[in-house]
Image (cartoon, rainbow, N blue to C red; front, side, top):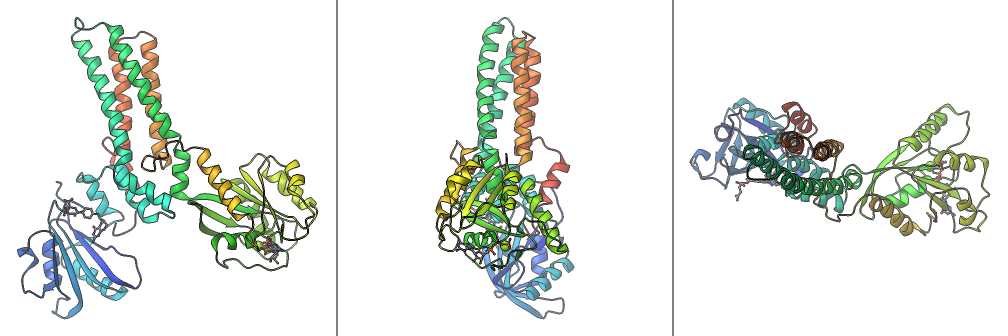
Length: 460
Ligand SMILES: Nc1nc2c(c(=O)[nH]1)N(C=O)[C@@H](CNc1ccc(C(=O)N[C@@H](CCC(=O)O)C(=O)O)cc1)CN2
Ligand SMILES: Nc1nc2c(ncn2[C@@H]2O[C@H](COP(=O)(O)OP(=O)(O)OP(=O)(O)O)[C@@H](O)[C@H]2O)c(=O)[nH]1
Ligand SMILES: [Mg+2]
């Protein structure tokens, strides 16, 4: 265990809640807590065994009571950070928590940095790097599937796969090195055949994991989805219907939405970062024009476009422009207002676009299930074949490491093919082994670690 100073932070969300927790971790955690807390029993926390809950009061330097509290005592290594940890469970208000936190600082703790508790848990070996990253993903999960992926990572399912690959590669390195040291025992061809089989096997596993990157990223970040169309086709009505809430203003006046509106929606388990945009048209209104420019930009930036058309009217020049804008992009074409007398048909629209056409009516919610199904299909068809939420690649850093490790393995195969010496193969394999260690954090630099934890919240 590494020696470290003592940190403290509010671990619960800011605001009013039933209970609010201040977490203290480090060598002096118990001494700090004994300064700010008086147990009703009259005993010092120092005298209690680990994993105890103790009732008492938070007191300031003058001995004045600040709040009542339950205190949890977890002695190293039986704690989240594997250091001595004390949790002061106070009433969940901004004032008692801030005041108590300040008292812990006066007593010798310092303010914890973002993610510093989890960083210590990582450095002290409780969690590996993919598990530590998953802690934040559990906190920010927006759908059940996202949570399932994150908690699978936290439980170590993803790491286990990586560790197994590293273990396999190390086994081959040992095999090669034995053959180098004792050439009389084995024939090179037999050794390289065996190594080749194993490397191909590991590469297949990597490829399978990489296929999950697309879905993994969506589950983690949400699929960026823009609703676009000419004014008055029902874009804001669709946003409201998907959110089941009157989030955006809807009127029959074209040009109602002038700025884009962004919200998270859970559509059949897929988290969408959904953006309602201003109706695209030529306009002299300066404010609306900025909104229209933004809408056009979102067509390029989004991963999915929901392009809306009014089924009760003929296709207009503005509609034609939208169809041109979305050509070649990942889009679903939605024929709205199908509750009214049909003028524009799905067949006619389908002649003008490659994208799937779905008939909907936001007022009756007709077709919204078809839309959800189409979105699910788009997300899951494009990547997932494992079906196992525990083993998704879930950020670009992880994907890049896997691609580079795979490249080292490809080099090993080329080395074998070229009939170069066994030691050259071993060098390629060692590079792959080291690369994969960057995922679990076994072979990663401090700067990368700091960057990862700097994205955490305070108190985590
Ligand atoms: N109050 C509280 N709730 C919490 C946490 C916490 O730190 N405090 N957690 C985190 O933020 C999460 C739970 N994760 C935890 C993981 C390990 C240990 C821990 O102390 N483990 C010891 C003791 C185990 C035992 O008693 O059997 C160990 O494994 O040695 C605590 C929390 C969610 N809920
Ligand atoms: N009959 C019918 N009317 C709808 C439907 N969807 C939307 N509308 C109506 O169409 C009008 C425009 O709806 P909005 O959701 O404000 O349209 P928008 O595309 O956001 O319009 P802008 O913000 O101006 O670009 C409103 O009067 C809605 O009630 C539908 O499915 N059927
Ligand atoms: Mg609108």
